[in-house]
Length: 73
Figure 1: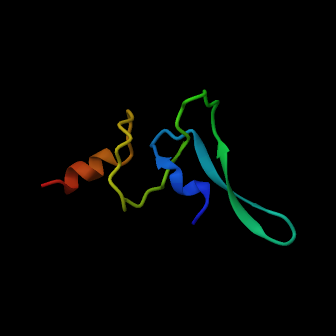
Figure 2: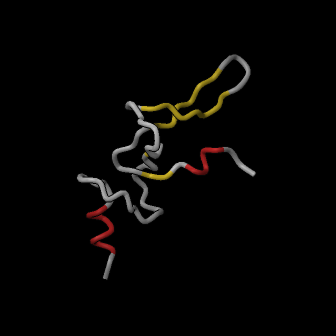
């Protein structure tokens, strides 16, 4: 069950973003790329600012690394 979006992982430097689109009858959410994606690249999105997950993106400039460091004993 569920759509393919459940397979999108987080990155602080994502390759795509969520967009809300609508016509006269309904609204839906789609994933739109934010940069060119090469064959074999993972399509990632930014889950946002609320830290409800452990960020493992390992990107330079990770938004969540300092928060996680503060929370680790």
